[in-house]
Amino acid sequence: MKAVVQDRYGKADALKLSDAETPIPDSTGVLLRVRSASVNNLDCRLMSGRPVIIRFLGFGLTRPKRRIRGVDVAGEVVAVQKPDSRFKVGDAVFGLGSGSFAEYVAADESELTGKPEGVSFDDAATLGVAASTALLAVRDRGHVSPGQSVAITGAGSGVGTFAVQLAKWMGARVTAVTGAASVEMLRSSGADMVIDYHKVDFTRGPDRYDVILDVSGLTGIRQLLRTLKPGGILVIVGGRGGFGRFLQAGLRRRVLRQPVWGLLARPKVEDLALLGGLVAQGKLKPVIDHVYSLPETPGAIARAELHQARGKLVIHVA
Image (tube, rainbow, N blue to C red):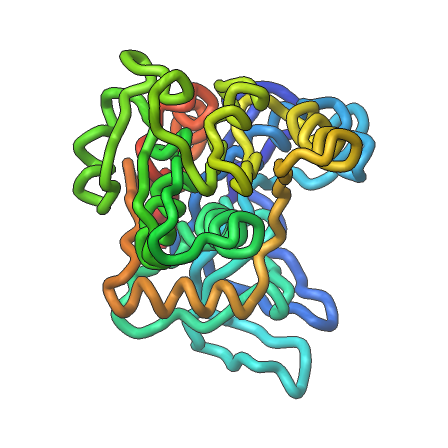
């Protein structure tokens, strides 16, 4: 099969389109013909091997153990290992599958769900990491409820665009903090207020929020905490602050008893099914910045590294 592979850590120029062996699923896996995949910040981190702690978590000390990048996937089942599998050959599914920037990927069926009718493979491929992370941040960590005020930094990102829509779906008033290029897109996605962070520091304004989801990592945690209402919650979702920001969140919560949570999400199959259903019902719309072919994958990841994408970058494989 054709796949985008890497034999060394580095930037997007470490990636190349090459021939690779078709994977063989394990006893709980299925083999998928990949129709679409999407790019996440996780792919950039695994590609670069940074922060270095990633290498000590089993991904390879001096070079990547797994040569093929990609996690999000949508495709068709072509082989099933378990006799009592939830899936059969020909089923359209989406979810997670490590090595999805390829024509075929082996995925654990516990990380897949059926693709609803009417949802495109491209849209379904965006839901694995980003939409699941947004859902867990809004629902499980932020405990967003109707009538609350929610601010979302990095709102133009993949996670951010989903978080804005999910918070609105849950009945919140949403302030989206973003760059100038995403302002109109976020207004059309339902944000009640959109702030260009290049022009306005929302933490210095008069407004206070019940929940702040920090996706960008560009504002200090102390400043964000000062912008909460009494009893409010700050959720550190990701961004450019790295693992140090998650560690700081944990220390502040445990030692200083401050209302701040770090979130490293692992999508659940029931959440994937919920998200797919919301897309099918028109209540959630993936924002796709650009669709690339498989050979164009290095360019997609280079764009993701520069934090230039508005919404998701999709790799259309077949």
